[in-house]
Image (tube, rainbow, N blue to C red):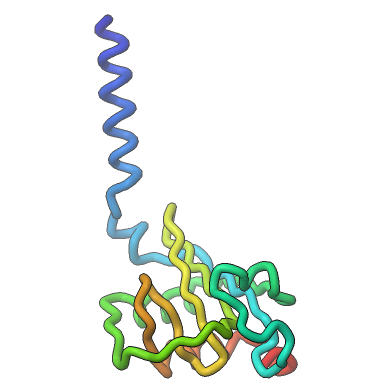
Length: 138
């Protein structure tokens, strides 16, 4: 009976440790994945944010730690500079892998984006994401 109780307590502790953001897991990006629909094309007009993966024709994975650190600095303590009017025409899905967690940012072709459910515009982040997109997809 004691073994069952010990196992149960151990399970509960491990479960909650996995849910608690640890500093190194929260602020060190492991990789960045971009799903891209050609930005200036009229193909797939009015793409909803939850369907970008299905419409995308290019996937880019960034694992270089310097590039990840730059984005991490931009997102750490991020506050919306301006709240943007968002339309349905989303073109880029950016999945940020923070340790065990994933965070998604959805960009439209004007640089406005959804981040944690808030529509924002930040030119610095948009220019950073555009730097990874090949010219023929812009």
